Amino acid sequence: MNILITGASRGIGRELVLKFAQNPNSTIVVLTTNSEQLNSLAIECLEVFNNSIIFHSINFLSENINQELAKLFESINLNFDIVINNAGKLINKPFLQNTLKELEELNKINIYGPYLVCQQIIGKYANKNCHIINIGSMGGVQGSVKFPGLSIYSLTKAALANLTECLAEEFKDTGIKINCLALGSAQTEMLEEAFPGYKSTVSAKEMAEYIFQFSISSGKFFNGKIIPVSVTTP
Image 1 (cartoon, rainbow, N blue to C red):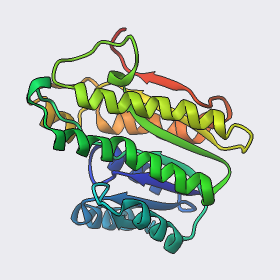
Image 2 (cartoon, rainbow, N blue to C red):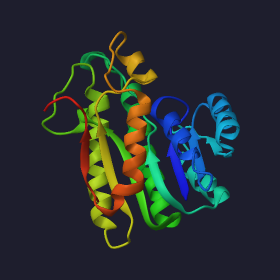
Image 3 (tube, rainbow, N blue to C red):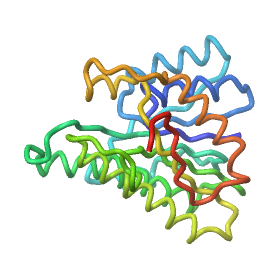
């Protein structure tokens, strides 16, 4: 099984890599911006599970990201069974204080990145019945509770959810399944940075376990769905 995970240097992404690495027959490709943390993750996978992950540093803010991704996937030359678009950025800041630069950065990381990865995978590098999971947020779900300071983050996650529905419809006859998991809070470094002092009841490891199981087993039952993964209501 070939797995691609973006944004895996910490938090849920890192836990996902460790979970998939337990299967010695899996080939795991990781794309993230922090190569130093990826080095330690690769060592841990090798020492604990005897599984060598393939990792590449990628900057979704690059002006040439499309060409860089095309060249990267060509060099990797694998067809994937599972793709998890986990890379993301969160800013907690009052709406009137948000800058155009911040808006552009979150759009590039939270929307353009998954969009371009999906374009590469669906176009050339998807195995039959490939399951693509876009990691969204409850903040991007219509009718869910919204929080002050998360306007940019929430709008990008809403766009990702909509993209999921569009792609699933467009490629429904190919066998590729595309779903979006709208996550509630999980105790990650990103959450701690955005909400200092807040403690989630769900750990990064627990959330990764759910995503892992969903990615393996749920492509048969879901396509084009935005699935809330949250203990809060509505």
